[in-house]
Length: 397
Image 1 (cartoon, one colour):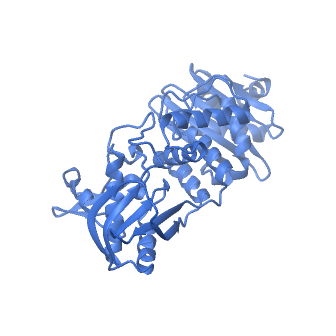
Image 2: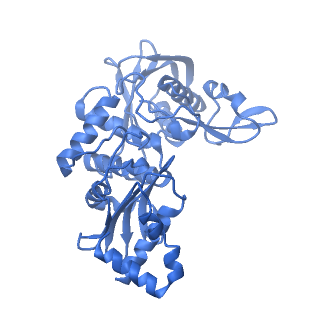
Protein backbone atom coordinates (compact mmCIF):
# COMPACT_ATOMS: atom_id res chain seq x y z
CA UNK A 1 0.00 0.00 0.00
CA UNK A 2 1.10 3.63 -0.44
CA UNK A 3 3.15 5.77 1.95
CA UNK A 4 0.15 7.71 3.22
CA UNK A 5 -1.56 4.47 4.22
CA UNK A 6 1.60 3.21 5.95
CA UNK A 7 1.93 6.47 7.90
CA UNK A 8 -1.67 6.06 9.05
CA UNK A 9 -1.00 2.52 10.30
CA UNK A 10 2.10 3.78 12.16
CA UNK A 11 0.00 6.55 13.73
CA UNK A 12 -2.62 4.04 14.94
CA UNK A 13 0.04 1.64 16.19
CA UNK A 14 1.73 4.31 18.32
CA UNK A 15 -1.49 5.73 19.72
CA UNK A 16 -3.47 2.53 20.31
CA UNK A 17 -1.96 -0.91 19.76
CA UNK A 18 -5.27 -2.56 20.71
CA UNK A 19 -7.17 -0.66 18.03
CA UNK A 20 -4.51 -1.58 15.47
CA UNK A 21 -4.76 -5.27 16.35
CA UNK A 22 -8.48 -5.19 15.58
CA UNK A 23 -8.28 -2.76 12.68
CA UNK A 24 -10.64 -3.45 9.79
CA UNK A 25 -7.98 -2.15 7.41
CA UNK A 26 -5.53 -4.63 8.90
CA UNK A 27 -8.02 -7.43 8.24
CA UNK A 28 -8.43 -6.13 4.68
CA UNK A 29 -4.66 -6.17 4.13
CA UNK A 30 -4.67 -9.93 4.77
CA UNK A 31 -7.30 -10.72 2.16
CA UNK A 32 -6.20 -12.54 -0.98
CA UNK A 33 -8.93 -11.44 -3.41
CA UNK A 34 -9.78 -7.81 -2.71
CA UNK A 35 -9.13 -4.30 -3.97
CA UNK A 36 -9.45 -0.80 -2.60
CA UNK A 37 -9.02 2.74 -3.90
CA UNK A 38 -9.66 6.01 -2.07
CA UNK A 39 -8.99 9.44 -3.56
CA UNK A 40 -8.21 12.60 -1.61
CA UNK A 41 -9.76 16.00 -2.29
CA UNK A 42 -7.12 16.68 -4.97
CA UNK A 43 -8.01 13.53 -6.88
CA UNK A 44 -4.88 11.65 -5.83
CA UNK A 45 -4.80 8.12 -4.44
CA UNK A 46 -4.96 8.24 -0.67
CA UNK A 47 -5.18 4.44 -0.35
CA UNK A 48 -4.63 2.05 -3.23
CA UNK A 49 -4.42 -1.74 -3.20
CA UNK A 50 -5.06 -3.87 -6.32
CA UNK A 51 -7.03 -0.91 -7.64
CA UNK A 52 -6.72 -1.99 -11.28
CA UNK A 53 -7.69 -5.62 -10.74
CA UNK A 54 -11.13 -6.70 -11.94
CA UNK A 55 -13.62 -8.01 -9.38
CA UNK A 56 -17.28 -9.03 -9.30
CA UNK A 57 -19.04 -5.75 -8.42
CA UNK A 58 -22.40 -7.17 -7.25
CA UNK A 59 -24.92 -4.37 -6.63
CA UNK A 60 -22.38 -1.57 -7.02
CA UNK A 61 -23.25 -2.23 -10.69
CA UNK A 62 -26.35 -0.15 -9.96
CA UNK A 63 -24.07 2.92 -9.87
CA UNK A 64 -23.33 2.26 -13.55
CA UNK A 65 -27.02 1.80 -14.40
CA UNK A 66 -28.00 4.93 -12.50
CA UNK A 67 -25.32 6.98 -14.24
CA UNK A 68 -26.37 5.72 -17.68
CA UNK A 69 -30.04 6.51 -17.01
CA UNK A 70 -29.43 9.93 -15.46
CA UNK A 71 -26.95 10.91 -18.16
CA UNK A 72 -29.40 9.93 -20.91
CA UNK A 73 -32.73 11.17 -19.50
CA UNK A 74 -31.88 13.59 -16.68
CA UNK A 75 -33.15 13.34 -13.14
CA UNK A 76 -36.41 15.19 -13.91
CA UNK A 77 -37.50 12.65 -16.53
CA UNK A 78 -40.90 10.98 -16.03
CA UNK A 79 -41.93 7.74 -17.75
CA UNK A 80 -44.95 8.11 -20.05
CA UNK A 81 -47.44 5.43 -21.08
CA UNK A 82 -50.09 5.85 -23.78
CA UNK A 83 -53.63 4.42 -23.63
CA UNK A 84 -55.76 3.97 -26.76
CA UNK A 85 -59.35 2.88 -27.28
CA UNK A 86 -60.71 0.87 -30.20
CA UNK A 87 -64.40 1.77 -30.35
CA UNK A 88 -65.25 -1.02 -32.79
CA UNK A 89 -64.13 -3.75 -30.39
CA UNK A 90 -64.27 -1.75 -27.13
CA UNK A 91 -60.66 -2.68 -26.42
CA UNK A 92 -58.46 -0.53 -24.21
CA UNK A 93 -55.00 -0.78 -25.71
CA UNK A 94 -51.84 0.13 -23.80
CA UNK A 95 -48.49 0.82 -25.44
CA UNK A 96 -46.00 -0.52 -22.93
CA UNK A 97 -43.20 1.87 -21.98
CA UNK A 98 -41.46 -0.42 -19.50
CA UNK A 99 -42.30 2.04 -16.70
CA UNK A 100 -40.60 0.45 -13.67
CA UNK A 101 -42.77 2.26 -11.10
CA UNK A 102 -46.34 1.20 -11.93
CA UNK A 103 -47.37 0.88 -8.29
CA UNK A 104 -51.02 0.66 -7.23
CA UNK A 105 -51.18 4.40 -6.56
CA UNK A 106 -50.31 5.09 -10.20
CA UNK A 107 -52.90 2.58 -11.45
CA UNK A 108 -55.57 4.32 -9.36
CA UNK A 109 -54.73 7.60 -11.12
CA UNK A 110 -54.86 5.87 -14.51
CA UNK A 111 -58.26 4.31 -13.80
CA UNK A 112 -59.73 7.67 -12.78
CA UNK A 113 -58.43 9.36 -15.93
CA UNK A 114 -59.69 6.57 -18.19
CA UNK A 115 -63.13 6.98 -16.61
CA UNK A 116 -62.95 10.76 -17.01
CA UNK A 117 -62.18 10.32 -20.73
CA UNK A 118 -65.75 9.09 -21.17
CA UNK A 119 -65.10 5.34 -21.36
CA UNK A 120 -67.63 3.35 -19.33
CA UNK A 121 -67.33 -0.10 -20.88
CA UNK A 122 -64.28 -2.13 -21.90
CA UNK A 123 -64.63 -5.62 -23.33
CA UNK A 124 -60.90 -6.40 -23.47
CA UNK A 125 -57.56 -5.01 -22.36
CA UNK A 126 -54.92 -5.08 -25.09
CA UNK A 127 -51.22 -5.09 -24.29
CA UNK A 128 -48.61 -3.95 -26.80
CA UNK A 129 -45.47 -5.44 -25.24
CA UNK A 130 -43.24 -5.02 -28.28
CA UNK A 131 -40.71 -2.85 -26.39
CA UNK A 132 -38.97 -5.96 -25.00
CA UNK A 133 -38.00 -9.15 -26.74
CA UNK A 134 -40.34 -12.02 -25.84
CA UNK A 135 -39.40 -13.70 -22.54
CA UNK A 136 -36.38 -11.45 -22.06
CA UNK A 137 -34.28 -12.43 -19.05
CA UNK A 138 -30.97 -10.91 -17.98
CA UNK A 139 -28.06 -13.03 -16.71
CA UNK A 140 -27.96 -13.69 -13.00
CA UNK A 141 -31.70 -13.56 -12.35
CA UNK A 142 -32.64 -16.35 -9.94
CA UNK A 143 -35.67 -18.63 -9.97
CA UNK A 144 -36.85 -18.15 -6.40
CA UNK A 145 -40.12 -16.46 -5.42
CA UNK A 146 -38.24 -13.70 -3.59
CA UNK A 147 -38.91 -10.11 -4.70
CA UNK A 148 -35.24 -9.61 -5.64
CA UNK A 149 -35.68 -12.27 -8.35
CA UNK A 150 -38.65 -10.51 -10.01
CA UNK A 151 -38.21 -10.68 -13.78
CA UNK A 152 -38.46 -7.62 -16.03
CA UNK A 153 -41.51 -7.12 -18.23
CA UNK A 154 -42.93 -4.38 -20.43
CA UNK A 155 -45.94 -4.09 -18.11
CA UNK A 156 -45.18 -4.45 -14.43
CA UNK A 157 -47.40 -3.77 -11.43
CA UNK A 158 -45.81 -3.18 -8.03
CA UNK A 159 -42.34 -4.23 -9.23
CA UNK A 160 -43.77 -7.59 -10.38
CA UNK A 161 -44.43 -8.59 -6.79
CA UNK A 162 -47.48 -9.54 -4.74
CA UNK A 163 -47.98 -8.78 -1.06
CA UNK A 164 -50.39 -11.33 0.38
CA UNK A 165 -51.50 -12.73 3.73
CA UNK A 166 -53.78 -15.44 5.04
CA UNK A 167 -56.39 -14.49 7.62
CA UNK A 168 -58.33 -17.40 9.13
CA UNK A 169 -57.84 -19.46 6.02
CA UNK A 170 -58.77 -16.68 3.61
CA UNK A 171 -56.23 -15.16 1.24
CA UNK A 172 -56.26 -11.35 1.24
CA UNK A 173 -54.07 -8.55 -0.04
CA UNK A 174 -51.61 -7.27 2.54
CA UNK A 175 -51.93 -3.78 1.02
CA UNK A 176 -55.15 -1.83 1.52
CA UNK A 177 -54.70 -0.04 -1.79
CA UNK A 178 -54.17 -3.21 -3.84
CA UNK A 179 -57.13 -5.46 -4.73
CA UNK A 180 -56.84 -9.23 -4.84
CA UNK A 181 -57.00 -10.53 -8.43
CA UNK A 182 -57.53 -13.96 -9.97
CA UNK A 183 -53.82 -14.26 -10.69
CA UNK A 184 -52.92 -13.40 -7.09
CA UNK A 185 -55.31 -16.08 -5.79
CA UNK A 186 -53.22 -18.73 -7.55
CA UNK A 187 -50.56 -18.23 -4.85
CA UNK A 188 -52.84 -19.10 -1.93
CA UNK A 189 -50.97 -22.33 -1.11
CA UNK A 190 -47.71 -20.40 -0.64
CA UNK A 191 -49.17 -18.08 2.01
CA UNK A 192 -49.47 -19.72 5.43
CA UNK A 193 -50.75 -17.43 8.14
CA UNK A 194 -48.49 -14.45 7.62
CA UNK A 195 -47.88 -11.64 5.21
CA UNK A 196 -45.51 -12.59 2.43
CA UNK A 197 -44.17 -10.62 -0.51
CA UNK A 198 -43.31 -12.79 -3.50
CA UNK A 199 -42.64 -12.18 -7.17
CA UNK A 200 -45.02 -12.99 -10.00
CA UNK A 201 -42.89 -15.84 -11.33
CA UNK A 202 -40.33 -16.44 -14.05
CA UNK A 203 -42.66 -15.81 -17.02
CA UNK A 204 -42.96 -12.12 -18.05
CA UNK A 205 -46.40 -12.82 -19.54
CA UNK A 206 -47.68 -13.77 -16.08
CA UNK A 207 -46.49 -10.41 -14.78
CA UNK A 208 -48.29 -8.68 -17.65
CA UNK A 209 -51.46 -10.63 -16.91
CA UNK A 210 -51.30 -9.47 -13.31
CA UNK A 211 -50.85 -5.88 -14.47
CA UNK A 212 -53.94 -6.10 -16.70
CA UNK A 213 -56.03 -7.74 -13.97
CA UNK A 214 -55.04 -5.11 -11.45
CA UNK A 215 -55.82 -2.27 -13.85
CA UNK A 216 -59.21 -3.86 -14.57
CA UNK A 217 -59.94 -4.07 -10.83
CA UNK A 218 -59.18 -0.36 -10.39
CA UNK A 219 -61.32 0.52 -13.43
CA UNK A 220 -64.26 -1.41 -11.94
CA UNK A 221 -63.88 0.64 -8.78
CA UNK A 222 -64.51 3.66 -11.02
CA UNK A 223 -67.74 2.01 -12.25
CA UNK A 224 -66.26 1.08 -15.61
CA UNK A 225 -67.52 -2.29 -16.86
CA UNK A 226 -64.50 -4.39 -17.80
CA UNK A 227 -64.47 -7.84 -19.36
CA UNK A 228 -61.92 -10.49 -18.43
CA UNK A 229 -60.34 -10.81 -21.86
CA UNK A 230 -56.64 -9.91 -22.14
CA UNK A 231 -55.08 -9.81 -25.61
CA UNK A 232 -51.61 -9.03 -26.92
CA UNK A 233 -50.58 -7.40 -30.16
CA UNK A 234 -49.34 -4.19 -31.74
CA UNK A 235 -51.40 -1.02 -31.58
CA UNK A 236 -52.69 0.05 -34.99
CA UNK A 237 -54.43 3.38 -35.53
CA UNK A 238 -56.51 3.42 -32.36
CA UNK A 239 -57.51 6.73 -30.79
CA UNK A 240 -55.31 8.05 -27.98
CA UNK A 241 -57.50 8.61 -24.92
CA UNK A 242 -54.95 9.21 -22.20
CA UNK A 243 -51.19 9.56 -21.73
CA UNK A 244 -50.06 8.76 -18.21
CA UNK A 245 -47.02 10.58 -16.81
CA UNK A 246 -45.65 8.77 -13.78
CA UNK A 247 -45.77 10.99 -10.71
CA UNK A 248 -42.27 9.88 -9.71
CA UNK A 249 -39.26 11.33 -11.46
CA UNK A 250 -36.24 9.33 -12.54
CA UNK A 251 -34.42 10.80 -9.55
CA UNK A 252 -37.10 9.37 -7.25
CA UNK A 253 -36.71 5.96 -8.88
CA UNK A 254 -32.91 5.97 -8.72
CA UNK A 255 -32.95 7.06 -5.09
CA UNK A 256 -35.27 4.15 -4.24
CA UNK A 257 -33.15 1.75 -6.29
CA UNK A 258 -30.03 2.79 -4.37
CA UNK A 259 -31.67 2.67 -0.95
CA UNK A 260 -33.42 -0.68 -1.35
CA UNK A 261 -31.09 -2.18 -3.99
CA UNK A 262 -34.05 -3.08 -6.17
CA UNK A 263 -32.84 -5.46 -8.87
CA UNK A 264 -36.09 -5.17 -10.82
CA UNK A 265 -35.79 -1.39 -11.09
CA UNK A 266 -32.18 -1.57 -12.27
CA UNK A 267 -32.79 -4.18 -14.96
CA UNK A 268 -35.99 -2.49 -16.10
CA UNK A 269 -34.12 0.80 -16.58
CA UNK A 270 -31.27 -0.75 -18.54
CA UNK A 271 -33.66 -2.66 -20.82
CA UNK A 272 -35.68 0.46 -21.62
CA UNK A 273 -32.47 2.39 -22.25
CA UNK A 274 -31.15 -0.18 -24.72
CA UNK A 275 -34.49 -0.36 -26.53
CA UNK A 276 -34.55 3.41 -26.90
CA UNK A 277 -30.94 3.63 -28.07
CA UNK A 278 -31.12 0.80 -30.63
CA UNK A 279 -34.78 1.26 -31.63
CA UNK A 280 -35.56 -2.44 -31.40
CA UNK A 281 -36.98 -4.78 -28.75
CA UNK A 282 -34.72 -4.89 -25.69
CA UNK A 283 -32.69 -8.05 -25.21
CA UNK A 284 -29.75 -9.29 -23.16
CA UNK A 285 -27.23 -8.84 -25.97
CA UNK A 286 -28.16 -5.20 -26.57
CA UNK A 287 -27.96 -4.52 -22.82
CA UNK A 288 -24.37 -5.75 -22.67
CA UNK A 289 -23.43 -3.93 -25.89
CA UNK A 290 -24.99 -0.66 -24.75
CA UNK A 291 -23.41 -0.72 -21.30
CA UNK A 292 -19.94 -1.71 -22.45
CA UNK A 293 -19.83 0.55 -25.53
CA UNK A 294 -21.00 3.59 -23.57
CA UNK A 295 -18.54 3.02 -20.73
CA UNK A 296 -15.68 2.36 -23.13
CA UNK A 297 -16.46 5.55 -25.06
CA UNK A 298 -16.80 7.77 -21.98
CA UNK A 299 -13.98 6.37 -19.83
CA UNK A 300 -11.70 4.47 -22.24
CA UNK A 301 -11.98 1.42 -19.99
CA UNK A 302 -10.45 -1.94 -20.83
CA UNK A 303 -10.81 -5.35 -19.22
CA UNK A 304 -14.33 -5.07 -17.84
CA UNK A 305 -17.66 -6.87 -18.38
CA UNK A 306 -21.25 -5.69 -17.89
CA UNK A 307 -24.01 -8.22 -18.49
CA UNK A 308 -26.92 -6.82 -16.49
CA UNK A 309 -27.99 -3.60 -14.81
CA UNK A 310 -28.57 -4.92 -11.30
CA UNK A 311 -25.29 -6.70 -10.62
CA UNK A 312 -26.83 -10.16 -10.36
CA UNK A 313 -24.50 -11.75 -12.89
CA UNK A 314 -21.30 -13.22 -11.50
CA UNK A 315 -19.75 -12.64 -14.93
CA UNK A 316 -19.71 -8.86 -14.37
CA UNK A 317 -16.24 -7.41 -13.80
CA UNK A 318 -15.12 -3.94 -12.70
CA UNK A 319 -12.04 -2.63 -10.92
CA UNK A 320 -11.96 -0.22 -7.96
CA UNK A 321 -10.29 2.30 -10.30
CA UNK A 322 -13.15 2.03 -12.77
CA UNK A 323 -15.76 2.52 -10.06
CA UNK A 324 -13.90 5.60 -8.81
CA UNK A 325 -13.80 6.95 -12.40
CA UNK A 326 -17.56 6.48 -12.55
CA UNK A 327 -18.08 8.17 -9.18
CA UNK A 328 -16.43 11.35 -10.47
CA UNK A 329 -18.94 11.37 -13.34
CA UNK A 330 -21.77 10.57 -10.91
CA UNK A 331 -21.12 13.62 -8.69
CA UNK A 332 -24.01 15.71 -10.11
CA UNK A 333 -26.35 13.06 -8.69
CA UNK A 334 -24.43 12.15 -5.54
CA UNK A 335 -27.40 13.29 -3.41
CA UNK A 336 -29.32 10.23 -4.61
CA UNK A 337 -27.05 7.83 -2.69
CA UNK A 338 -28.04 6.63 0.80
CA UNK A 339 -25.92 7.52 3.82
CA UNK A 340 -24.68 4.08 4.89
CA UNK A 341 -22.80 5.46 7.89
CA UNK A 342 -22.02 8.89 9.26
CA UNK A 343 -20.28 10.77 6.46
CA UNK A 344 -20.37 7.79 4.08
CA UNK A 345 -22.72 7.96 1.08
CA UNK A 346 -22.43 4.75 -0.89
CA UNK A 347 -23.94 1.74 -2.64
CA UNK A 348 -23.21 -1.68 -1.23
CA UNK A 349 -23.17 -5.05 -2.95
CA UNK A 350 -23.67 -8.49 -1.45
CA UNK A 351 -23.56 -11.96 -2.97
CA UNK A 352 -22.20 -15.29 -1.80
CA UNK A 353 -18.51 -14.59 -1.00
CA UNK A 354 -18.84 -11.08 -2.47
CA UNK A 355 -18.89 -7.86 -0.43
CA UNK A 356 -18.49 -4.46 -2.07
CA UNK A 357 -19.02 -0.80 -1.24
CA UNK A 358 -18.50 2.26 -3.43
CA UNK A 359 -19.36 5.91 -2.97
CA UNK A 360 -18.06 8.99 -1.21
CA UNK A 361 -16.42 9.91 2.07
CA UNK A 362 -17.98 13.27 2.85
CA UNK A 363 -17.32 16.37 4.92
CA UNK A 364 -18.94 19.77 4.54
CA UNK A 365 -16.96 20.66 1.42
CA UNK A 366 -15.54 17.53 -0.18
CA UNK A 367 -16.96 14.29 -1.56
CA UNK A 368 -13.99 11.92 -1.94
CA UNK A 369 -14.75 8.81 -4.02
CA UNK A 370 -13.79 5.33 -2.90
CA UNK A 371 -14.37 1.75 -4.03
CA UNK A 372 -13.93 -1.37 -1.92
CA UNK A 373 -14.28 -4.81 -3.51
CA UNK A 374 -13.85 -8.08 -1.62
CA UNK A 375 -14.43 -11.26 -3.62
CA UNK A 376 -14.13 -13.77 -0.79
CA UNK A 377 -15.98 -14.63 2.38
CA UNK A 378 -15.70 -11.80 4.93
CA UNK A 379 -17.77 -10.65 7.92
CA UNK A 380 -20.86 -8.77 6.78
CA UNK A 381 -19.97 -5.52 8.59
CA UNK A 382 -16.33 -5.45 7.52
CA UNK A 383 -16.95 -3.16 4.52
CA UNK A 384 -18.67 -0.55 6.71
CA UNK A 385 -15.91 -0.81 9.32
CA UNK A 386 -13.29 -0.25 6.62
CA UNK A 387 -15.18 2.81 5.35
CA UNK A 388 -15.41 4.21 8.88
CA UNK A 389 -11.65 3.78 9.36
CA UNK A 390 -11.00 5.48 6.05
CA UNK A 391 -13.05 8.41 7.30
CA UNK A 392 -10.89 8.57 10.44
CA UNK A 393 -7.73 8.24 8.36
CA UNK A 394 -8.64 11.27 6.30
CA UNK A 395 -9.35 13.31 9.43
CA UNK A 396 -6.01 12.35 11.00
CA UNK A 397 -3.87 13.50 8.07
